[in-house]
Length: 159
Image (cartoon, rainbow, N blue to C red; front, top):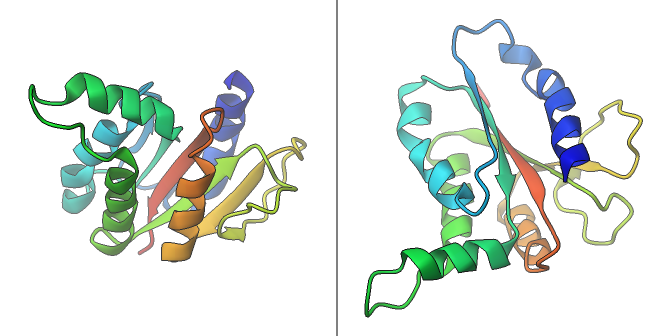
């Protein structure tokens, strides 16, 4: 997990190159179990153009579900975390015109999601992919069903 975050940090300049000299800051968030809430809290920042890009720890679903159980209102069932994640990713892509990219640990897996992005990094065990449609989002959500799976989710303004 620590090496995933160091790799993520090293790739941020590559992914944000078009906006590197922008006065708008980038966000990095590693919020153990609160990644859905953290991501939703960025909506006003992206809407206002205050933030142009961010990288977030993303998943796995079992952590989201534990947090949903803790935060559920008394007497009500917990929110469906997979549906919430799907809504968040779709909202970021469609409403806020953000590009979604994921970095995961299984580059040679048949489960690759999205379109691979060329990035020069010696860690060949990582896979960086651009999610351009709903199919890519669904692939990520299936991958995160495995409780041992975690990835970094990048979002950045397209225009």
